[in-house]
Image 1 (cartoon, rainbow, N blue to C red):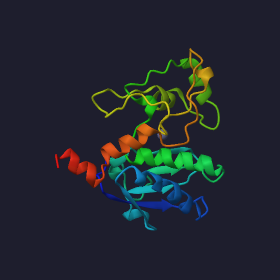
Image 2: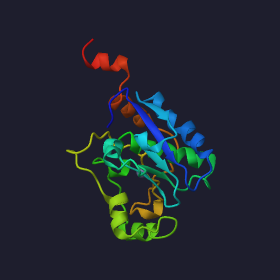
Image 3: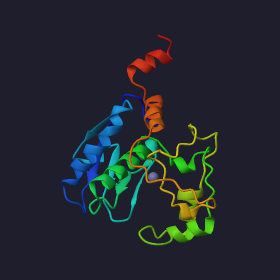
Image 4: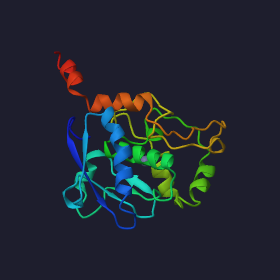
Length: 208
Ligand SMILES: [Zn+2]
């Protein structure tokens, strides 16, 4: 994760997308600033940016938090691939989710506390189809991987998290799915504040 209070520069590789897409990203990404003590500064020059956003048509993904610092500055650290054809609410959901990754948050279904009874073969088959076209290794990494308690700061399992994938009920053995989450959940907001505390909380944590 970045430092609380840090100003993160967000730059763009606009190839393949209309210039106005920058304002869509900006508009929704800043919602995190209300709950995390972090500031995004949107800049023209990608090379000077901490988070570098591209729009290639190959899905949406992001490096996790300061992993972005390990990426060469001529490469993007986030891709928002389906944005130009998405509705406003879908664009907002994807931007909130990917900027959650950029702030250091992993997938909620990969939490050590997640315990989703997947029907594994149905999951492989589901994600092998368009638009994902994922092979089994990619499904393993994106769906079945769970982090250990030692390597993540985890909350109680939060099926409402913006960081959770939708789980169609037919992909579980108990027929219970996870809905399409479109908002930051209560725990998302709470944990954003834990890890990026505003000054008042920092002083409290230090005993003032
Ligand atoms: Zn994700």
